[in-house]
Length: 356
Image 1 (tube, rainbow, N blue to C red):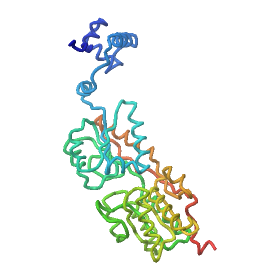
Image 2 (image 1 turned 60 degrees about the horizontal axis):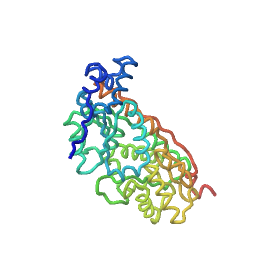
Image 3 (image 1 turned 30 degrees about the horizontal axis):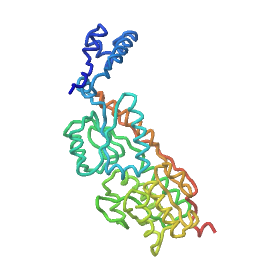
Image 4 (image 1 turned 135 degrees about the horizontal axis):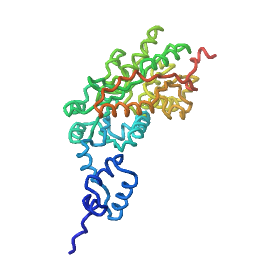
């Protein structure tokens, strides 16, 4: 049985091109050190010999750089990607790091997340809206990995990218108050792992394990309190649209249903629209629904959702810039919160008693 042909090496290319081994290495790893003509000749010889270039692992070891970022999620990949806000942010981050040849390693939440990150060949970690005490953050600290946090939790030494969630929620609450609503509900996500869906004590919502949820709840509550409104606060069964629809059906079927529902995301708001449609409630004739994020879900909903817009693309790009600074050993600037804006669409109107 014949042996497989030997794969050409960097030394073979150097000998065939009549240059040193270091010069061939520079052609791949430090092209600025060579003239365009010399580099072109080396690459031509390499192609003729069938040399594919330095092995990626060997190259990363030599450069002391993995060329990869760990993107830390709180849920499984399928559950996490039911949130369009995550998809848009992640796409912007991936696009921003691609020109430098960097890759993203997705580390989904769960029991195996810490073990996976402990063995991962990465230069930096980017955490996306993790709970305050996520075990994977301990591994980040133990490994001494540079850390960029999107939305929270804040960590000493980490760069934090955040939106002015409280101001956005306040603008949404102010909108429904000015329309004349007095029976208002807030629909959020589960406050803790394993928590049941349904009504929760209003103060308990401010202790959610997620920074973003706490900020949005606080923004809604502060404006409603100023107007003398005590909202009903409900937690959905999950972050997805079907989970929100299931919980919203119970909320809207109660003895004293709200005339307006302020939601912590567009996906939750779309679930409220689905529940209202099944119950025969007109939006906005009988129910006003407001979301948060302004993902494509908001503009394509029926009716289109009034929501709070945040710049999800800018969030991903800023995370890339901060990760670059941290990996280069530079102390990154701590950016101010990204601005928000209320976008009024067809899902909000004055309550029926005022519209007549």
